[in-house]
Length: 329
Ligand SMILES: Nc1ncnc2c1ncn2[C@@H]1O[C@H](COP(=O)(O)OP(=O)(O)O)[C@@H](O)[C@H]1O
Ligand SMILES: [Mg+2]
Image (cartoon, rainbow, N blue to C red; front, top):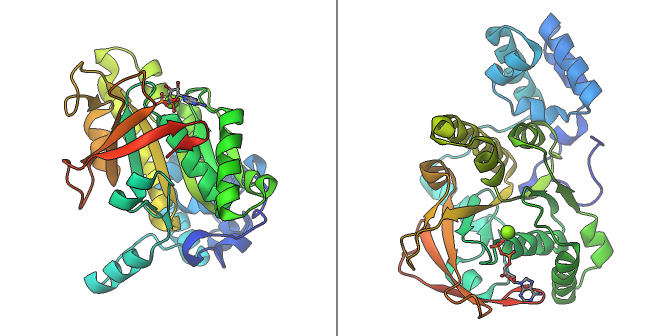
């Protein structure tokens, strides 16, 4: 991967020390054989050293076939050297104050921004819904407005649902409103497709730019559903899904990244309250806020979001949106 991208680096003031170190940092913290192999891996694959520092000792041990205690020393050393804060928190009042100040991305879905307050950086949001409810549109919209606001965006499209034309219209709208240059904003967006679950995990674990401010996965569930078929693989599927969301959570926690996931629902043909997000408890417990999107009449270009599991927001709240040519409104 190339070095730090042009443009503003790091959300929430991160990146000063971290951005400047390369794979050499690994050899600075350890001269072990494992460190040498890890250094080679880092160099040859073009992995950002921050991604390695974000790995658990177990992951590093598996990666370079090393002893876990050796790997642990490397990881601990790297985190120290890079100044990577793997713990977020402190006194409640200070934490609350910091949360108040956290950057918020307005989706420009008016009712959503008013009732839910927008999308807060450092958190994971889930949007579940049936086919055609506007999940991909919302995902593209979050990406477009984030890019328009100078965030670096990684968009992972697992359903082949990314439309260049639609994204272009949403970005044009965003740049009209925010007075930016479309080309410059578009240059802040990276778009990825992955062959399978393992490629998705590899991408999220090792290939994300360190300053990715917004990470979108549309949808998170598709490759898992396709590749772990049948009841007998259900447990494995949930484990792999859990692991993938955990990789994203690390970025949210340590880098202040905003993560937006879409999810299909297992359709239960009854309105409001009985459709269950696919992936079950894994997604319910690992996103910070989960909304379910409904489109009561497919002939009408409007829908409703229900705060399925959103701290501080009653599930009785109804967030209304319209589907337009240039995104949701
Ligand atoms: N330019 C447009 N104008 C109006 N409706 C559109 C436009 N493009 C797509 N749609 C409709 O918007 C709906 C939402 O699409 P999409 O975001 O792909 O839903 P999901 O990802 O939830 O399946 C679809 O039903 C689609 O027909
Ligand atoms: Mg979609």
